[in-house]
Image 1 (cartoon, rainbow over the protein chains, first blue to last red):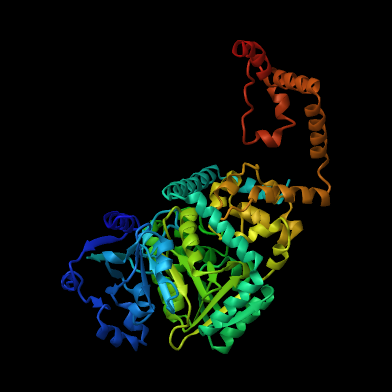
Image 2: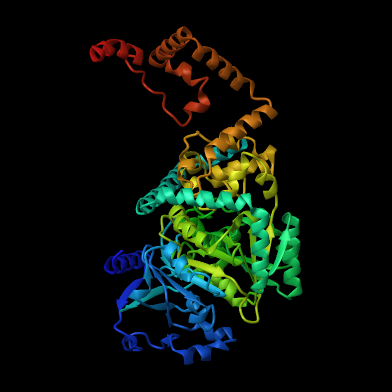
Length: 158
Length: 457
C-alpha cells in the first residue's frame, strides 16, 4: 500500500472515530496558546516530574495532555500508547482533551501489521486508542466523553 | 406456553417500544454489514478466528498453563476457580486482605453469571458497575437485556427518571448528552475513590500472559489505573495462543458488535502498576463440561460481540429479558441447557431456524444447528404437548402422500377464501401477530401444468 493511501485512510478513519486530525511540521507547532496549560508528555523532564504523581487531585484538572506514539493503524484510526510514553497509566484517560502525536512513517495498514510491529515487546501496559471516549447506551445516541477524554486530536507529522 | 413466549408477550404489549427495539437493533445489524463489507477478506477473517479458537480449545490445558506461567512472571497473581462460589470467595478474600471496601467494575458477563455483585454487596462491599448501560441497570436493580447494549430495552425518559431518583438530575430531563454527562460526573467520583477495580476479559494471550479488554467508554482503564488493586475475571475460553492472534480478533469484534472499525480503547494489561497489585482469576464454572460435549463445545468459541442478538428476528421482537438468562439471544439459548436444562426448556424453540445467527457469527459458531440439536434433546426428555404431536403426525401423513397433500391444499384454500374465521379459531396463537394470507387463484401445480409444455417444447 502506498504511503499516500495509508495516510489518507488513517485520516479518514480517525475522523470517523470522532477525533480531529492536524498536521504538524514538528515539535515547534505545538502551541500552548491553542491549548492553555498543555502538558506535553513527549518531553522527558515532564514525564519524570509526573512519575511520582500520587495525589489524585493532581489528575482531575488536566485539560490538555500530549503523548507521542510510535504506531498508528490506518484501517481504524487507532493510535498506540504504552508505559514508556506516559509517566502514569491513567493520564491519557483522565485528561479532558487528549493529543496524540504521530509520524506518518509510524502508520501501518491494519491490526495484523500493528501486532507484528509490536512483536515481542515487553510493554507492561499498552492501549490502542481510536477516537475520544464514547457511549451509545442511552437510546443508541452517540455521546462523546463517557469516562475518558472528551476530545481527541491526532497531530500528524512527517 | 413457554416462559419465553409468556415474557415475550409482555414485551410486545407495548407495541411502540417493541417496534423501536426491533428497528434499533436492525440498524446496529446494518452498521455491522457495512463495516464487514469494508474489509476485503472478511470471510477469510471469520475462518481464521474460528480456527484459532478451535486450536485454543483443543489445547486449552496447555495454553492455560502457559498463560499462568507468563502472567506470574509478569508479576500478576493468578488463581483458578472451578465454580461461581470459588470466584466469589476469591474476590472477597482479595478485597479483605487488601483492605478494599469500595470497588468499581467494568463489564463482565462472567461475574454477572457468577452472581458476584450480589455476593459482594451481601458481604458489605460497595460495588459500582461503571459501564453506562450497566450502571443504569444496577441503579434500576434489573439485569442487562443485551450483552453489548445492556439498556437497549429502555427509553431515554425511563433512564432520565432513574437518574433523577438516584443521581439527582433534573426531573423530566431525558437528553442523552445531559444524562451521560451526569453519569460521567457520578462515576468519576467512584473511580477516584475506589480501592479496587474488577474487569472482565475479552482475550487472554497465553504466550505473554497479557489480558486484553475492549471498551468504548474507557471505564475499564479509569478503574484499573486509578485503584491500587486490579482484578481481572476471565473464563477459561478467553485464552488465545499468541499476540498475533489479536490482529484477527480486534478486527472482527467491534465490527461485528456495533459496526465500528475498532473499540475506542483496546487495552493490554500485562504487569501491575508500580506499587499496585494485579490479580487474574481463571474461572471454569461449567465450561469443562461444555468443552467435552460434542455439540456444545463450539459455543466456547464465542467472543461476546452480540451480533447474533442484533440479527435474530426473535430476539429483536421479544427483548433480552424474555430469555430469563444472563446471556440472551441465540448464543444464550445454546448455552442455557448446560446451565439448567429445565429452565432452558423452550429457549431452543424461540427460533425460526433462519440461520442468520450462524451466518453473522464472527467465529462461525453453528448456532442454528445447536438449537436444532437441543430441540430434539428436549423432546426426548419431556412429553411433547399432545396437540403438537398430533399436528406433526398429521403433517407427516399429509406430506408423505401426494393425494392427501393436494386434498389438504385445496381444503386449506377453500377455507382461507370463504371461511377464514374458521381457520383463525384453531390457529389463534399464530394469527395473533399475523394476517392470514389471501389464497392465490391458481396453485403452483396448475401454473406448472399450463406453462411447462410451453418451455420444454
